[in-house]
Amino acid sequence: DMKKLDDTHIRFGAIADIHLCNIHTRKDVLETAYIEFKKEKIKDVYVIGNAIDGESKFNTYELYTPSGFEAQAKEFSTAMPKIEGITTYFISAQCHEGWYIGNSGLNVGNAMEAVARRNGRTDLIHLGHLEHDIFVQTKNGQCCIRLFHPGGGTPYAVSYPAQKIVESYTGGEKPNVLLLGHFHKAYYSAVRNVQIVQVPSMMDQNVFMRKKRIESVVGYTIIDMTIDVNGNVLSLIHISEPTRPY
Image 1: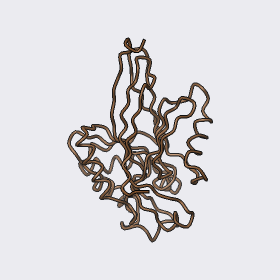
Image 2: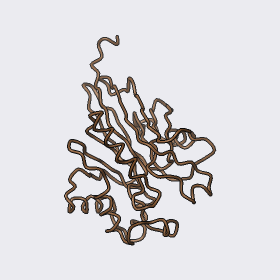
Image 3: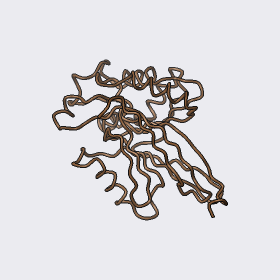
Image 4: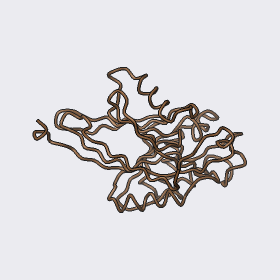
């Protein structure tokens, strides 16, 4: 009986793959996203990895900051919009900012948060490396929202990597909602009762992506969810705002 369900309603913003410090990053779109989040009374924003571009042989000539982690971390604390009432939570990824982990063993996400705090940014909070689960408590259970920045390239079909990720989960490991970064796409699908949202990027296509024939969808996402008393997702509205027509 649907009338007996005591629903929980939540809304939040999601962005991914900002790649600050790369000349192809779209700071204008980032600022526009936060203006829209404020209009929509969003209080929590989640960054699904690659907030900064990191350093490697792949991006040496695309960086607009001096070399070194401190310069990129400072740019993160400066360039991320600061709006009263909005807290930004982020995960770190194995690629890009994760290159600092491979080169020096630096806990890059925690270090980024520490630099942000030194620059007066208490609204930038690191949740974890690669993935993090957020649990929404309900009357009789909980709803799991997983933030995940996977690896691998873009396949022939946009839906394929998300499908294979969910297919790999055992029954007790599945989240209710899976938010994916990395692929620079705006896409929704549902596999094995998992609601999947691929979150678009904040970076224009660069030469590497063009060479590999990889599209970069630039934009931001608002998630509007209704959850029942047992933690099941009754509805999920995925509002993505790409900045240019397909």
